[in-house]
Length: 243
Image (cartoon, rainbow, N blue to C red):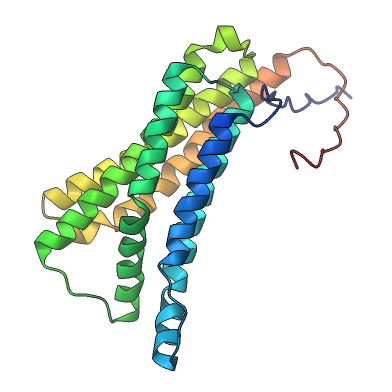
């Protein structure tokens, strides 16, 4: 039987944690700690119930930050870029993340409390402003990430990216671009007065989240099939420093 094409891994060009990554990790950690610091220790039963109601918004925000951190970590492990353009984009990303800690938590607190039936009543102008602020934040974060991957793609010759790595890089560009695009769509929907659709529009993210990996997965498989059939590399042992 003909041998199946092996999975070609994306080569990690980073060999150690740089000062840029270390500083970025501090900012991510501080952002998450701000979510926790805003929860005061309860002293009465009523305060305890209030704290429990704040758990779900905290959990949602926590996983959003962790998801962005994983994307950030993947970028620097793959490309190990520290040029001026990367530093500028990374600084902009950290600025947006720090600025949006409390607006993000408030948005999800309001959304989850509305499901429970005891949310704060906002005027239409207030709701429109919230969707606008949140949409700008979503667009900024994911379009900055898309720009970072697009920058790596422009440097594909200097980074010696192979065909499979170029496909994977393009996938991250498109994935982050579409994620940010839905923030812009929600913002526009809110501005034209369709506030009841400004939130549900984010559920449509499932469409590009399904199509983009599938399309680029097919391209990756074809690239792997046409690559020289080399023996599978032995899985390296994970060092305690890198996990």
